[in-house]
Length: 290
Image (cartoon, rainbow, N blue to C red; front, top):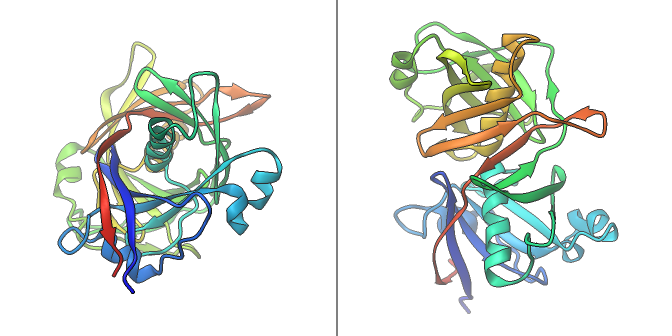
């Protein structure tokens, strides 16, 4: 018998999601069901699914639940594949929890479990800010072939809880000429794939102590999206790395869906990357699963 479930549509700078409440972990969405829900012609439409489930109700959340974390963000890409993290998605997830009264950020930070560990969120001037934690820069370059930019370009690997390859382009014309309807080819291909960011630094790069860049992104399991939160963080970190020791710790990143902020503070003796931006809930309804 067909099953009808509740959902809410939300987005962070145009990176959109189907939010599915499942507090007790009763739903078992197949990859095909996720793909249909995210289909923009035959379903609701979205870059992915955010299943809102108690950490204690999902095996991957058991360790977080034992430490007192209540909620787990079960993020699935539009093709149904599971992903470690989503920087825009976790802000939308927090906004949803606050709106339905399942959590609050008014009395302090909110901790949310993900496949990339527990992330802490607070309110910010742009909406919500998430601490993505420390990051890792990969030592070996990856060669990136993409339609529209001619010769292959070197890309810098950065892991911010999920894998990214960041490619620097010389000007906005090349950025706009990119055809991201076609999957960029990576050589060598990372074991679990990667999101690929193409970035152009502003001129001047730094104004009033804030670095500024513009980027587009191809998300694994999705395609080009209007925004990618972890990709924004990775792109800012890559340009900061290339710029050297004098590079700022505050960044403004323009994506097709809007503008996001990145900070790189020292927390407990270690550098963390923090992402801030808006989170919007659009509408709610019910849908019958395929």
